[in-house]
Length: 509
Image 1 (tube, rainbow, N blue to C red):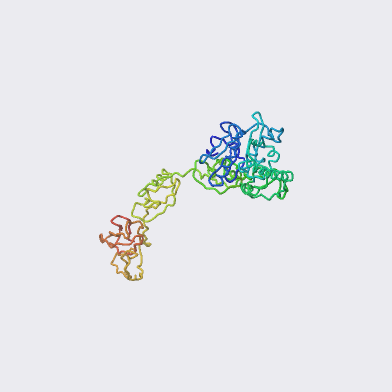
Image 2 (image 1 turned 90 degrees about the vertical axis):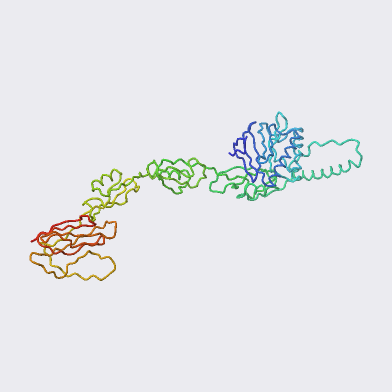
């Protein structure tokens, strides 16, 4: 428990009230009972110093046990009462014992303590007070009634001789009044009033004591564990509410102190098994989270509250579940310009896998990688797919037998935008000399380029010599369409940005 109880080791908590904790402890001089006051308000301070005044009164009579300790230091207001093994002095036997008990009660009478508040023992050292309830408080008349025959037999100071009449007469009058009060108290002792017990269930200990303050009952608190009922309230009383009792009767109040269990160890178990163990232990699974771990997937790696933490029954426990080993990261290399086989090899070395393979027309060598996704230098989890785009040559469409009758072309509306196809177009009617023919051309331009347009240049070699019928710029991703008049066998070379993109031959029929 807390260090504030040092040098006393707490063995058991007997009862708790608003500012008082009663503890069974083991101290430097042996076991005993510790009354610990939390002095923060005037009420608590007044109660402590009334208790200390009563102990000093008992100390002057020589009836306190050895080893009793009183502390009134700030933050350390307590009284340690050592345990006594001597038998109880009640019921008192012998005139001497009765007189000594009466002397003790008479010294405590002005402070509001009565016989039911004391534990009086009689052993080898004579009469000793083994305990005194700190918060007990009675009216002086009630304390005298509860003292009964002990008060009546208490020794009184002897009168001095030689006093004048005017000095002893007031004392005589006070004595007469005292006798009348004593007779009245004796009558009430022999004919005690009947008290109807109120219903104290649901009250705090302090509220119950306040309600019973004038009842004269011997209130005893015991603890009971009811997890489903509020803590630190009275759940049962014995006798029951409505019972008719007389002063001095024992009233037992059961204070609810639910016992706290411990969070079971479910770490290392599969999630379903761990949840079932929580239910079997009286706790509720309160959801779960997940995290990467060296433990197998779906295995519990932690709980909140942690294992063995004190927790009332019926509370929720959250679980953290393993997602398995964290994924390994790898970096994607630059694959552009490699063949497909070379790219596959580097992808496997990087612990990645080949995904979709696309093809696009490109001036790059056929079958080489011209694009990749994700881009080079990206950190990827091992096993991630990589998409490749390979270069391919555009298909050149030629007519059967290399003959094509030119077809009329629709007129294109004038526009400031870039043309979608590269000129020139074959006119609707072409005059051909002997041995001449018309060769149509349709080539898809590549989509991959660093700019929006590409420089297109077509070189033709035939019987008429070498010439360049097409030399222009065209948007990337469009098609080059048109026709060229040739004579004899014709050899075509298509350059894109001064790079030989495609070449073919059209033989004369």
